[in-house]
Image (tube, rainbow, N blue to C red; front, side, top):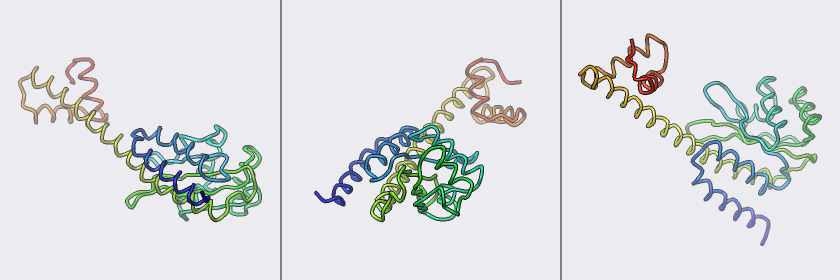
Length: 228
């Protein structure tokens, strides 16, 4: 079987398996394994994720790599930073001497020993989710086919990541709605108030304490003490 056909089969298998990755953390951990296995020349993988507090790298095939990835967002330079803000794909054949990143490039080459990289933006039509960074300890390790194959993988990863995040958000919303409903039930039973009034009480306490509504509800359900 020719190399393109082998990759196509590997990518198809990976895409099908991604459908069952409900947890975002599990999705990222699996991506690290899949990318290192099917992208030729890839030695290390880091996945950076955009969230409400900023950007971090929750998963990487090396702990030092995770710190180096996060340093990009401190220095505001590096291929992952550029992939998120400037270009969909960012490639470097020689990190130690790449003039685009004069501080970050030599640092990662020295501390981690990687010298070439391809970074891909992970996104859907609605959102930028993060970036997938493929590193190699060899110079100029990624040819045009490798870069295109990584791009195809990144497209599937973006869809899988969006699906897992949506599932987690939905699960959290259902959990929050359940605990709020239980808290409303306690107030309704204790004070004989209708559901809308019970919800109004919880919301008022939330606003006065500057605490999220679901936290107020969790406290009431746990302690059974009426909010004052």
